[in-house]
Length: 327
View 1 (cartoon, rainbow, N blue to C red):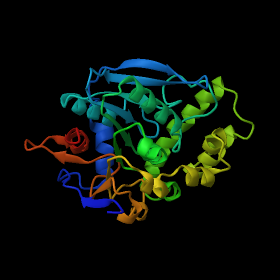
View 2 (spheres, one colour):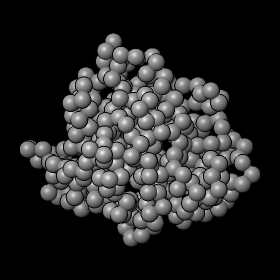
View 3 (spheres, rainbow, N blue to C red):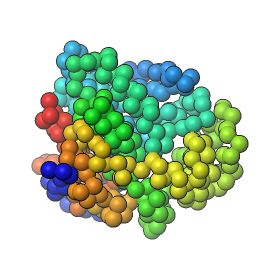
View 4 (tube, rainbow, N blue to C red):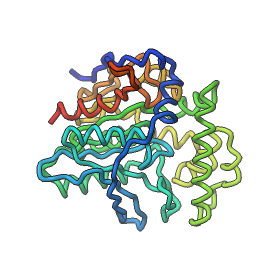
């Protein structure tokens, strides 16, 4: 086979949560924060900056190891990360949450910040873990922005990618259409909330770090959509010409044929952050890639119902099941 596979997911939504927005909002707003103890390590980077690693279990010899990467404005408190970590621990995995550069409560030291194409720190971390635990099966899991970073890193690494297994969820395969979608209809609610968090992060950074001359903090604070914010802030902060240059150089969609490690992508056709047209075809996927498509699920949702009628966070079980089946 010269290309990947697209398969129909067996996910069945909770009967009261068939709406894309309900699937997206319920896990974020109504779910209690899953209990998880993290041993936080501040990892000093070669360029003088740092990222924080939240270990939920340190690996024993021969134990599989997972690296979890959050979405935009996420971090150690993201419920989908904590829930997945708990599922993985129940199946015997060790692992950590990578809190991307600038994502924590403490601003990072350099002007640059994490963004959709920022694979360098992830690849360095995976390389470190591969050297430190040479006999471990290493998996990399990313959600949304973290999924884009995860897939892009896997494509860049090819056969030499340090992770043995790759999983990505609710991935913005093409960034410009996603930015367009988020300024339409009800999706503007998500844009407003995300931009509010990003603007707060930008203000904290501006108070601690000398910004490049072409960063326009005032315009970033006044931005009404992602195009304007990324034009004024994300692009110049990270060395891109403008928002469109940033989107085109950082989206993972055109790179999926270069992935050479076993890879599962879970995606919903009703994701309110994106257009269905951005979903790749089988011909655009490498032979090692399986794209599992669901009609329902929203954005990082996939909430089903248990036999007893409770909310069932199906996605977390699916990820841990797929990874464990590859051991």
